[in-house]
Length: 126
Image 1 (spheres, one colour):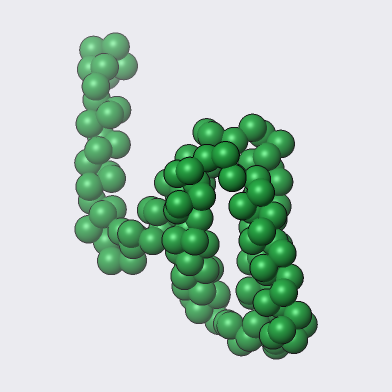
Image 2 (cartoon, helix red, strand yellow; image 1 turned 60 degrees about the vertical axis):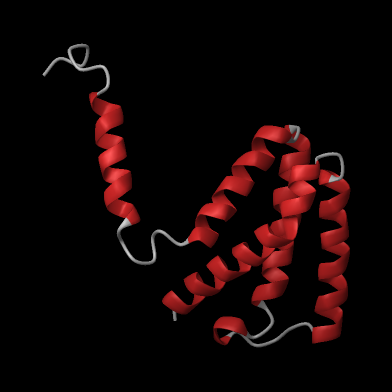
């Protein structure tokens, strides 16, 4: 089959696969899609250096969250120290995105969705 004879064939097949995957329980989790959409919006909106800074800061927040005993991990550092560190990192995230109202508005939902996704991954790996 010649690729030029059916220019929309690939798009049609992609739509079919996407539709089939949406019927799979667990795949079509809205929080997962929200997390992906927010990440894409941040990448398209922010300068590369700011996006890299944001993702690095979010990674640090995730590491602290994963040390709170979720998924069988031993809590470290203590809860108060983790909370203070996460608040500082959260403040830094808002400094990065402060000029973009859509990113600011959706940040807390994004962070909650990210934590839910991470929790699901950690449960699946235990």
